[in-house]
Length: 303
Image 1 (cartoon, rainbow, N blue to C red):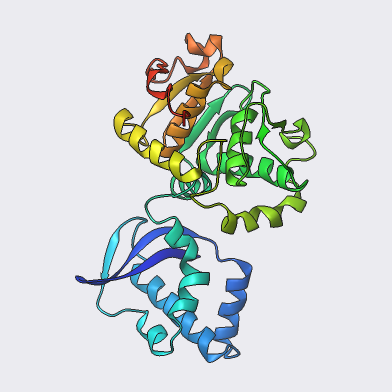
Image 2: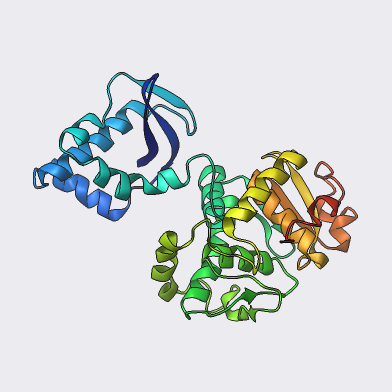
């Protein structure tokens, strides 16, 4: 396992922020084997030892908690002049997802990494998806889109939860979303074009492309939308415990789209309901969610 941790040198001493845990990628496993076998170069060995030192010191910690350290695992890196190399390939993603996401792509990935199995979306025909499952569904659509080198704004208007997955996919791909844009082909929405391996490389390349200045709509960038989501979240007071019911029939309308993004930002649970579910239906056993009020979201997408 790899501990996603951010080394921090501050006035109060040296420490790390533990952000999460995930399986080691194959290249990291190969590197570790080379170090153990004594085949690695001096630089690779020093970097590996720094990672292991971090892991040993924070291994007992839970994601998000601060842990003090008496000595810094970065010291050997500084002595060999390897700090820049270490920061870019090894900590760039950690820095990017540290506490605050800067782009809509970051938001999707960060929420899935941190909330994992917490409920993210309930929709007719889908049941309840966890945050990890929602990310997988959105990225499956993104792979299908990017496999065909799309041009111009994209949109989806099936009237199903696939429209939300498509909007997430377009955002994560750094493409424009527009209600009158090109329609995402149905085969990419769970069909033969879903999770197209030909789109995997282009999707991962977008990690370096999608920035705060990347436009998502004709008038708003990722950074501007993230700022609006932060402000709106303060106003709404939503958090991980929030469940919000939203009318599936209005999924393509601006207020519902803004509410879905707000629920994602808060780490809450969005429930898309049809007429039956909204009046009781399969949700009657759950604690009643607040009635849908579009008022706070009316101006969200305006320039």
